[in-house]
Length: 251
Ligand code: ADP
Ligand code: MG
Image (tube, rainbow, N blue to C red; front, side):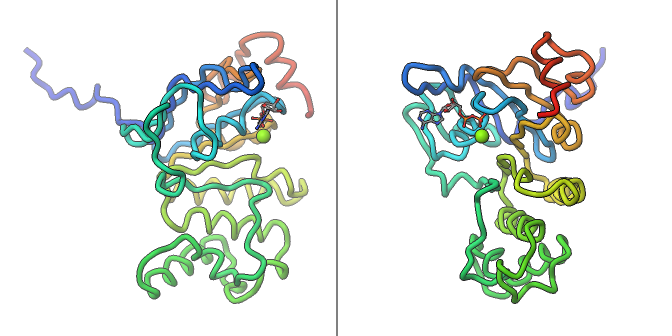
């Protein structure tokens, strides 16, 4: 008889799991029965055309928008359904949005340290660690207006990661940057995210970005996830003609 432990068969609990999320606006289902699960250290891209419900999905996970139905779990624990709701500031979620600007009146160090609690020295050490990691230590006492768009974006990433969020939600974070900068920042962001061992949900309407950054792509259209899998599979085995058109579109 095989008495080997079944550890290899056990699934690790996903860091983030959403089940059957729905949200209506004006009688229209904008997010229509969306389910996803993401492990720590994994990047999932929610990819789809403008207006398909990506940002609304992210906002519900962040807790700034309420779902009509469905549940959200973090490390297997319910954080939100239609009755029970952990407030946004207690969800241990990092946010990075295109228009989520730095505080102009705070130094770079204070921006990065903004969400940190605890002793001054510990906070300072974490700020320095992250600024070194994004190669911006020279700006530690500078102010946002002294930085280029790409540098500000790296500070925003450091700020979002500083409190060691369990989950990072990123909504088109690179779309304000010019093409020349974007690839470098995408790669740098990705390696930092992997080091921090957080589960990442990255929203984008650009197939190229999803192909570059995702471990898994969830292709969304009209409020629904129409296909999900490894980038290679989603790209090479499109689910229908609309998926082919979306991937071949230059957006
Ligand atoms: P995406 O991020 O994929 O571009 P959104 O989630 O922002 O899509 O929006 C999906 C749809 O829901 C859009 O048609 C948008 O106009 C609509 N929508 C989003 N927020 C609201 C709201 N607060 N009130 C009414 N309609 C909304
Ligand atoms: Mg959006």
